[in-house]
Length: 438
Image (cartoon, rainbow, N blue to C red; front, top):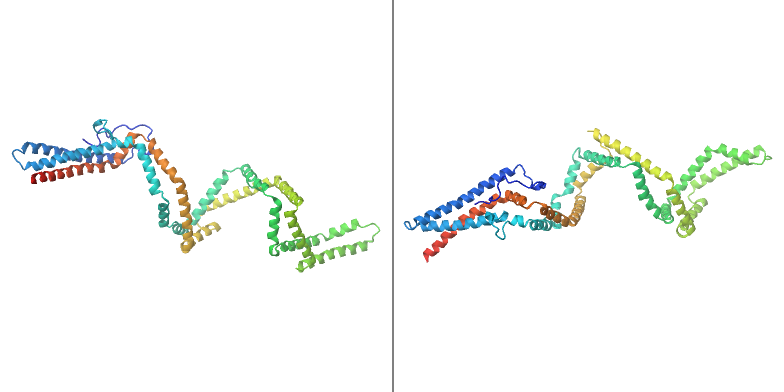
């Protein structure tokens, strides 16, 4: 009798087994150890049977053999009972259709479902995941790794390479379509007038819009100086024929000098009346954008015309092409360079690593965020994990699964047979002592 009865070591397995059930290099060693331990357990049972036969034969002549008979008889009962129990886990003992045997093959699907539920409840529990992540201190580990020489450059190279690869997979037309369907389409749905009014309010807050006016004044002064001759020629062309040339020249001087003085005065005087009118005009325009339907409709019309212009898509394509070239150059530089001064991304990564090591508050916050993210992800996936385990086990061949499990734990189960034989014998001696004492 052995737990391997009915399953020869070289029995053929079904074709197309999943990876987990295919033979592995250590299966032969496990099988040899299993067979060796089966022989030990069976040999002990045979020794008990032989002792029982000898004691039964010699007891009339040597009464003390009653103790040997009691031990060996109970040892056989215990050994056979445990052989039956161990064998019934994996197959039908002696091939007989005894109920509640071949438990692993018959209950494989139920075992898989129970295993999935067990993993879900006790291994993927939120408190288990959170506690494990807290003990690992991922932020401190990440900080130490980033601060180590060369690691920041390695990460920067990986990021640049990944972005370059992703950029290479996208065609210019795809990017243009993405911009039009994503950014442009969303901008089309956003009302232009309220958005523009909000922008003006932000610009005018604290008088920041006067910086724009100052730039405009400087630009006007430069244009006036650069085009003074053109202005004089224009005045001469527009003047009547009967106006003398000297009058035209003096008129040109007055116009140019007057505009120059006005621009200089407005630029130099924060309280200049023209600045006040500028403030009033901006305020009226902002209110009109919010309250005047006609102004809102006009702004919306201009926005749609602007977004519909071919230059928008061309601009997106040009920006994308330039960004892709820069990514390629950056990735090539990081791949070729083994030393040299770190760039901005490398310096930022290295500084992040040092800060994560020095700033315990930041590290604790990051650990907390990682823990919450992991717990949320596991909480959503734990049901799928349990279903995956149950479904995977259900798809396995019953006999192959039984044999694989027996190879993993069968050797240890033989100790049940050995212990059953020995403990059964001791119980038999105890019962014989009680009878003899009575």
